[in-house]
Length: 257
Image 1 (tube, rainbow, N blue to C red):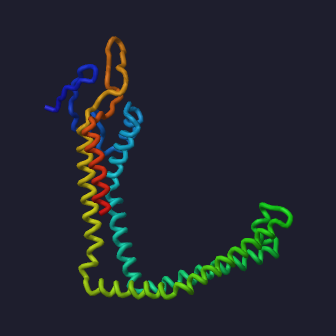
Image 2 (spheres, rainbow, N blue to C red; image 1 turned 90 degrees about the horizontal axis):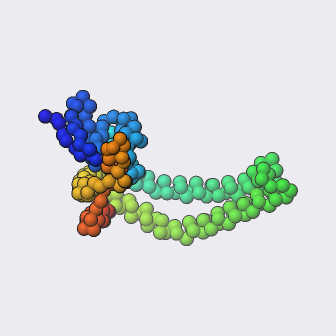
Image 3 (spheres, one colour; image 1 turned 135 degrees about the horizontal axis):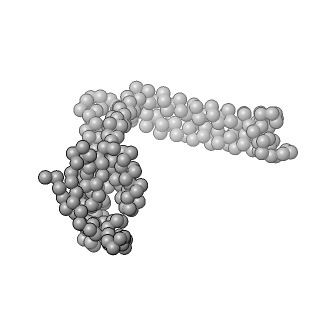
């Protein structure tokens, strides 16, 4: 009939109000959809900070499922966009990045050298006096020149390996193009990972629910009535802690493999 008897230090009869839906957890009642009311209850309820964060995180995730699904879809689309870039212009993109790095180092070398001769453009003049700004500018210009020379040597010595990598990626993209079903692998993998994650987290929550809810503070006496259980926590046995660790390790292991 919607009436439940609970004992928290004293006996109370709770009546279910259909216009005020709530969900029971750890002996408390929480609103499933009103975020502001949930935050208000959390701030005034004597429960540990960890449990508060757990409830708020879970509640926010449930209310933001559309955003989370959108992020997952965006990540999948970015993966396909990356494959498209590899297939069409990976070599051009690689050479453009190398050219941009050369240009940036040369510009830094010339810019710091010019600033060494003209104090108006020397950024070190705001921090040092005398000849120190000039010394700092020429030092930075020399370091930029050293890095540019080293980078140029690296690019020249590794040109064969870079060309081999480009040819390998092109051949891989051609193989993927001959097997269109391979393009479904990122989508199928994402769906499987998300499904496994939801199932494992749901099972982990069930495992945590096997703990015993105990009072974590001394009873409060008021008006001749002693009330216990204002502050609660979960108590696990050694075997339960072993199961929790095993489940957490298995969750990470399954998702990583």
